[in-house]
Image (tube, rainbow, N blue to C red):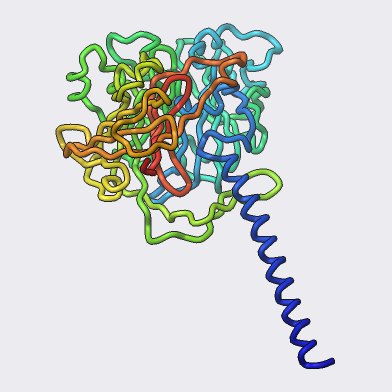
Length: 433
């Protein structure tokens, strides 16, 4: 064989190897893109299916919460919490014990004896741990997978909470055969009624003990599960200034507070997130290695947000204000959040544009919704907004009207915000229009 022919064959083999590698990489990118598209944010997810206790509100961010838990100053696993779509009917569901019905108290005689309960065990929260077991979580150990949290009423009408881990079984209505006690503290506020408490669940932060708790509506009160005597931040100055509209500043669930993330070092090329399904891990390309920044961020809805209608957003509408516990250069650059001791770090406004009502202040627009963020220093930046509608979910039995709440949106590579908007939820992104 001539040297020229050998070189030609060698070149063809190299070319074929290159083509195969390109095809394989393309297939990987397509698969990864599909995986990321299925999980655009947490807890909005289709890879887990409809959450048993949430039903049609499974993918509605206003009701639920998700973040990486901070453990000993470092990020632990990503953990989502869903609230029951029947949380508004909690005390009706905690009625006298029916026999042989789904949702009845634990089959365990030990549980009944320990609580002296005369009511059902009603599932109120469903938690999913996306990572390794958490040995010192707010609810005791949280293994990988699902954990169900139940309320029961003891004979003196006191709420008791219990948890039961189900692994990969997405069903909190199965009969309880074993469970663990969870401390619960019921907090009520003066001059409030049932509708003043939003039907939601939120991770909360105990500043005194530097650990998480989880909160949920429980009748005309807010119930905290986890550490007893939690040290939480109060915003008395905002409550006083708001007057009759103070509920969004005083009652947890309307607002959201957490220790914000910050990039640690540069980009990392691949990030593995544990998951269920055909592939045990989901890969996020070019993720950021995040760390807790130490800055506590609190986002409050505007008191009138829930009453707004789509026509109101033909003009700029104030939807939220953000407060920071201390300055953050990262969030000042990203979202124009400029720390101030006596006023919000920033105020977020939304506007909805149509073909008949173009945006006069923006040179271009790719979406119908956009945000204007005005910092405490008075300057304004604009950001793209992603609107996610709930038309299909609203037609299903068990739908619950969406409360006018706001919350932080945890991403595996960053952190943004959610705001209630008509017929859906609006995510304020980091992208400029």
